[in-house]
Length: 317
Image (tube, rainbow, N blue to C red; front, side, top):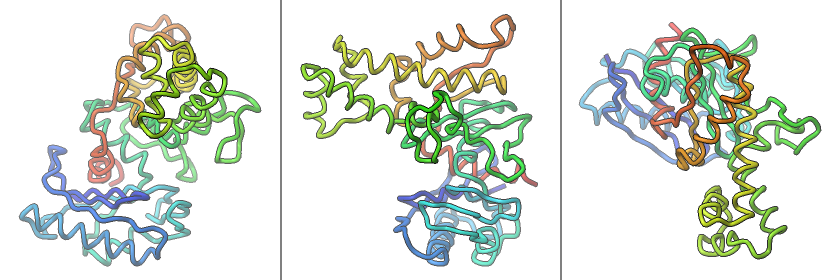
């Protein structure tokens, strides 16, 4: 059986044909070129999806379902209610794909939830039924799966763990609240924290590292820490504490089998995960339980979203 998985991003649209072993057998992509109309974007989605099917040596008759992962909120009717970075308001995504591709089984879901589903079934989750994926990127994205089902909530906006507050009246978050986990644990936040430390420590090696790279990045403080730089060590230690605070909250609230950490920062591997696990082990409510949540690095990378979208039928039919 073959399914199409689509990742509608702010930069690119990616469409892949995925088989029943969760393997990608063909992929096509096109720039999103946003802002532009939903009709133009969905014309391109249909075009690259058909291209991916042809490159797989198949026809649309071979496709069982189509799944689309999109930024923003999606309702039960397959309508993208709001996606600010695409300029979408009440876009009937499922209907538009049905019309363009001629496939009746079309499923629409938030992109972070698709990535979580992909990791849970085809990646590091290995089929775990209680699973949370956290992405440390521009923001803090998350997808929550409980008993094998995506947690959407009554309004299909559930699972936004990046916007739980970890510091009351803390840093301003782009969502309008103050002190959100995203405002402290995102890559954007790490860069801001690094720049502040560079102001406070004019002799820090972070100045040299940033000059060599041409910018301050999420790697700057970690690279400085590895040289023994005091400012770099402080930034990394504080940042991991912020990440850990949110992860501990998730463990206490959901007690999932696995929490996987993705995004560019996860490339630090055990440098990030080892101290993170220590904080979780010390502060989790379930300290005396025999079974504990595993904290691991995501493994599917950019493929998680399209694979998760392709297997939406498994949790939505």
